[in-house]
Image (cartoon, rainbow, N blue to C red; front, side, top):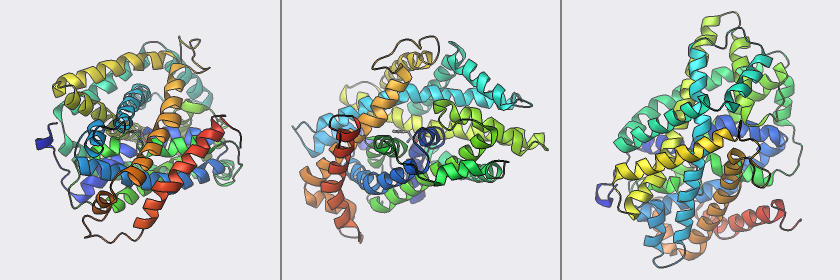
Amino acid sequence: MAKNDRANFGSKLGVILASAGSAVGLGNIWRFPYETGNHGGAAFILIYLGCILLLGLPIMIAEFLIGRRSRANTARAYQKLAPGTHWRWVGRMGVLAGFLILSYYAVVAGWTLEYIFEAATNGFAGKTSGEFISSFQQFSSSPWRPVVWLVAFLLITHFIIVKGVEKGIEKSSKIMMPTLFIIILILVVCSVTLPGAGAGIEFLLKPDFRNVFLSAMGQAFFSLSLGMGCLCTYASYFSKETNLTKTAFSVGIIDTFVAILAGFIIFPAAFSVGIQPDSGPSLIFITLPNVFQQAFSGVPILAYIFSVMFYALLAMAALTSTISLHEVVTAYLHEEFNLSRGKAARLVTGGCVFLGIFCSLSLGVMKGFTVFGLGMFDLFDFVTAKIMLPLGGLCISLFTGWYLDKKIVWSEITNDGSLKVPVYKLIIFILKYIAPIAISLIFINELGLIKL
Ligand code: PHE
């Protein structure tokens, strides 16, 4: 988008919902439960909440102010605010992270399409939990079906990006997000009342601390769409009146709430039907169909309606996130390399299809091909969520806390003094000291550089 025709989000609610639309996605409903399951339940959640409060919110405010101040794609933003310095690499790393995330995220987004299809053709009816597990394994490791859905999902994203539908994103978010929320609430009630659900609730609430800091921090950044310029790009469409601090709090609260509720759907149900909480990326795909079948076993029509609606909304939630990822890379290529928007978008989609296919195949026929012991899918997830996003967050907090003129920071956070922001000093203190130190310590300790 050229600078002079940069659109603005139309309303306060629109700003919050579009940002929350980016934040709420597979990260909350798919990734959060399986990371929680892999890392001991309650302990992971506590550290995750700490990361959201202490790192996520202040860094989100920093990304917002960088974006709104510079009104440019994330790479240009740093060039504008820090001309001729190496800070531009922070923006570029973000673009690369966005590209890599989109490539493997679209694989899982594709799975949601398969599950809409399964639900809509009544494919869940009468299956046992063992059958759900084996059919997921068969599906996700097959060479064709997941690839077709992956390409379909990227094409849908592509189509929306090319049409440039800020208004469309805003409008549909206003309907979809509340609907998704209501369905999630209903599913929580269904799940916690299944027989044997108590063990799952206990797992969620009783801490067992292990090496969980890097994963919890990575999940916080991933889930908030933070550390790669996504919210920075969205903030370049905010108006002068937007209250950055309040917006960050609203997005943080909505995002966290959805994730915790997803936990309350998945774990009671998983324990109830005897599925291991550390089943990894397959967790929601093998647990949820059980919730639908068992909770509504007396009324199959309800099982049908809820499962179709749930997967459709999950796909939509994923779509608002893939759009935000795609937009970051497209805006960058379009503005920095003088490509038309359509051409830039085609390059991004093509590149993601290419890498996405490898990610998808790495769960099946290409299982044996690994780097550092990880297949492509797991490698992309690890490198982006656990390294690039927190590293981006570290750079953003240093940039805002130390480099950027305090007058700019103050004028953006308080809207030129017209807002009272009682936590202003705290935000600056965190950006200057707490966030850089905490992120560095977690890196140093958990990547095995030095054991503390
Ligand atoms: N936050 C999104 C989710 O939870 C994923 C995402 C990560 C989107 C990074 C944009 C940038 O699904």
